[in-house]
Amino acid sequence: MIQKILYLIPSCFFIGNIKGGGTIASLLFCLLLLVFKLTDIQMIMIFSAVLFFSAVSIEYSDLFKGDDKRIVADEFIGMTVSMLFLPKTLLITSGAFILFRYFDIAKPLFIKNAEKVKGPAGIILDDILSGIAANVLVRTILWAV
Image (cartoon, rainbow, N blue to C red; front, side, top):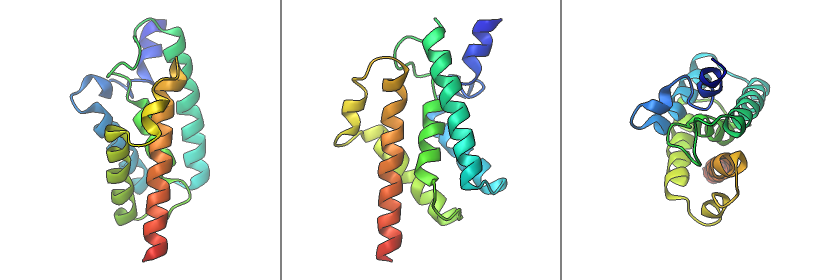
């Protein structure tokens, strides 16, 4: 029973079992953001809770081995970072989503090195860095426009 509970958060309630689960988890966050008009404080609370429960679940569950493809909460976390303190419009959210997925999949520059960190931190850190890169690029584009 405990193992099933430990599986829920990292897999985003079994989204990780679906092909393309990382993209679906990222889109889910975008939908939640836009539909519920989440504030930055609410996003930080969600980020903190998902980060904590994911790290604990990954660390103490024997269900996951390394950066298991079923773990998609890290995409949810990274997408949260990519939208922090930005206007919550459809255009900006779409841009942040596309940039986050690009950085998360391509892992350019320093992002690839984050995967070398052992344990839950390594699984989650590359997505946080991808979110930061997307956030900074969106801000740069908004500033330029």
